[in-house]
Every structure is written in structure tokens, then in C-alpha cells.
Picture 1 (tube, rainbow, N blue to C red):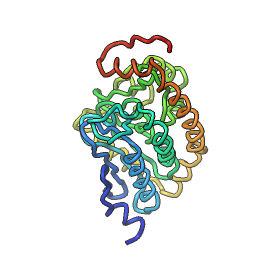
Picture 2: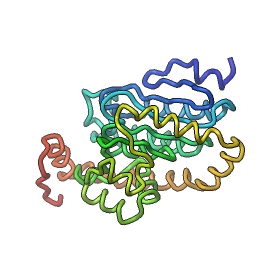
Picture 3: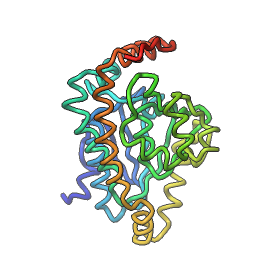
Picture 4: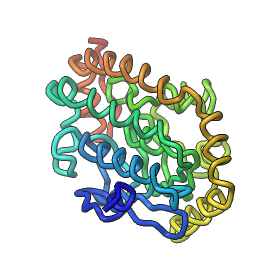
Length: 273
């Protein structure tokens, strides 16, 4: 079995990979919230690597099962029962650096990606939603950079990817306030490229990817490489800084209060310590 065939035959634990004509679908399968951890990002990176080597694949749709595209990071089990595990000291020291290294891989491949974003893309989940070149959203989609509400620093390269898409001012607004950006506002900002009803999301994303896949593949990859030149390297540098800031902030009282406040759906009572 060749390496390119292997990615379609491989039994991934948390994702499914399929090919429909010249469009591949990579589906995250941790419903309903699709919390991510190092294991999931590694699987995504391996799937993208296999598809990158497959001539039959000319574009990718990144999608997920369940209510939310990705409701955030989880450095524990990756399942819904341990959603705050990313805030443990062990999570940051032993896991996050490896996770970010795999995340950087996602930005270094050649094939264009369309994201089908339903429900919420929150925190690090927003970082995953910004891996694709384009995003298809619904009126119920929410893009949220809630790090300051949690008392920590943005991660997953968002300090590079978000300003590049929405501009410095709007990125600052999202980072400083944690405001939820709804589907229609995301479309106006360029954070989403297409807005469709919920039941049309996957179909619209596939049609978008098929339109891209109609282009000459060598030219397509060449243009994309030019447009994204140096992106993976910038994200690698950014994640080193983001992680350092996250590590010291995690240990503050404000971060612990932020976790409690978000879980209890109330404003944080921060003490600046």
C-alpha cells in the first residue's frame, strides 16, 4: 500500500478522511464539542501530510461532527469530561509545545483548505478554524477569542492568523473583549467567506472546494505557496512567544478566577495578581 493510499485506509482514532473526486474531506469526530488536544492535532497533521502527497486530491474540506466545530482545547483526555485540563501545569509544560509544533505543520502543506464551521469556534478552536484558507459559516456560527476572559494569552498562532484575516483593529477587539462574532458579522469582516443555512453547510463547503479544485493543480499550489510564503515560519515563532506568555499567566490567581467565571457564565472578579 502506498503512502498516499494509506491516509485513506488508515483507521484514525478521532478523524475520518475520505476523497470525493478531487476533494478530500477531513472530519473531526469528537462530538458534540470537538475539544482538541495534541493527539487530535497530530492526526490532522498526518492526514494533511498524506493528502498533500496525493495527486488526486486538489483541495480539502475540514469539517467536524456535532454541535460545534471546535469549542476549545483540552490537554487531558480530549473528551468533554475534562475540558479544563489545558490549564494544568502539566498540560502546559509537557503537552502544549508539542501540540503547537503539530499545529505549525498544518500551515505548511500545499493543498487549499475550506473550513465548514458550525456552532462555535472558541479559543484554540478558533485557531483550528483559521487553518483553512476559507471558511463557510452559518448564521449560528460564533467565532470567539476568549483568552483574556480566561486570564491567559492567545495561542495556536492566532496572533499571526487572526490579524492577517480581519486586520489589526478587529483582532485586538476580539482578543481584548472576548466578544462573540456571529456569522453575519464574520462575513462582513472577512472571517467567513460564505454564509449559508445550517443544513447547507457541508454541501456549500464541498461546492466551494470543487470550484477551487477545477483550477490547474500545479498553478494552484504555486500561487498558494506565494500567497502564504513564510506563514508557517511566522506561526512557529509566534507560538513560542504565545506559549511563554500562557505559561506564566496560567499560574496567576486571575487565570484561576477566569476559568471559574467562564464555567459559571459570569464576569470575572479579577485582582490583578
